[in-house]
Image (spheres, rainbow, N blue to C red):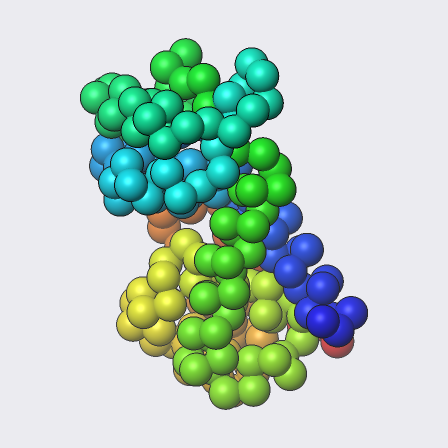
Length: 190
């Protein structure tokens, strides 16, 4: 892996965690889906058993039975509360390394799709790649391209000033929008 690739992975992880949050225990998202880590939805208990949960108290690997029981306990709670409110119902955690591995796998898929959607993606300035990754992570690759056509056109032309003007998303915090805008503006200065 090149130095630029390593930097992209590290900075992407940091940016996404800052925007999305990172939760080591299971919780319910706003629509009632069991979720873990950095917005990693678990479709069912079987999917949860594929993750390396540990028992918080002992640090030992959790059994499939423990994982299924905790998944079901969380799934039965009221949805849409802040993630920390579900902590009282949990005994199992993912380590930072496990959360990072899950996130890195998802980021890799987003980057692969961005390469298809934006010719020359790997040659874009690092800050532009980061901005695109954040937007794709938040909107989905399809949502980015289809819901932000002016932005997409500007990114394909590498018009970073126009990208900065068009990157505002309604469903994210203003600070996150400002951070992504600053990434694109930094490319203009380069």
